[in-house]
Image (cartoon, rainbow, N blue to C red; front, side):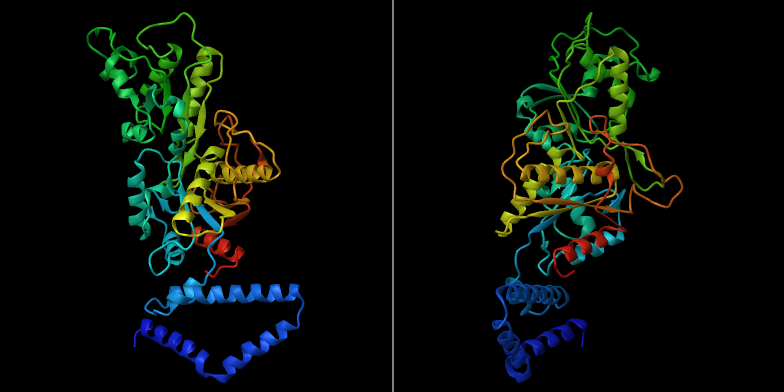
Length: 452
């Protein structure tokens, strides 16, 4: 007899016993008669305990005894979830292109017999050099469960909200499908750094082999650049840094020169502020935050002024977490879960982005609950948001990525966050520190009284 058949037989006998065994009938009646003599408070507590016990049985039966048809009616009695997960990807679920084993176990437990997630989940990554639907397919293949594109937030996803720039001519920097990503974000007129370099070849002079051998004619038909999109780290940093600064100093006409650089300069929208990120290498790699740091330093050195952003997206910006919260709400609605999602658990490996961002969002939720309007850091000022049912966002830090305590050089580090996000030591302290994402989910389920 297989394990599955044994499991089915056990559940069948248990359910049949509820109908035939007098002892099994007598015990509930005895307990109920005792409850009838209790105060309303005691009755409420007892019913709550009974509800949790039944939910645990239903979860275990539904997960462990997959062939058993009778687990279906048990699952129907479970309450809908009131919590969800915001999951980082690199360093939490994968390292480079290799899935972390604990992530496979976690998602095995997180899905029901129909392959559906038991609670709403949104994947919040600071990566941006990939299309949203391809990232969703990549996660589906790695984790063994269906991930929809609208469950994935790339670092630049909230740029969809900046509609005032969608019809302007924007210079876009990054790598991979930058034009497709920009158009997916509703930007209709985009120019790549490579297109700008081709139009004005004398601007890119660092690489001797790419310098023009003849003096090219000046282009008069090239559109005036009206803004800059920084979607992610480019490949040739020296080229991108030079041409972006040229655009800012020339007010969008890099083929000409201005006596005085305009200030404020053209609008700049940037995503992914991570200074470092974790791949297969033993040490962290440079992230887009490092590129932004270089750009800011060059602009400040050349002009004596600070580079300004109209919008900063990706973790730890509040705009990204508000966007994620909305996707969690929509996901719950599609699943027919009518109870509002009140708690979010944000799991990440980087204290400077994941923990800081989750704690900042939790702080914002507490202020919003008290009727205080919080300033949207890096989101172009104050943003009006609809009333939220979310009450808290709990930060959980894992040890499978950037955060590696106990290793050489893992002592107290300088603040790696972006310039526009002040160093607040309290925001860098995770509510919980665990080994991996499996332990993180187990902790959250225990906190919510759900069986894991």
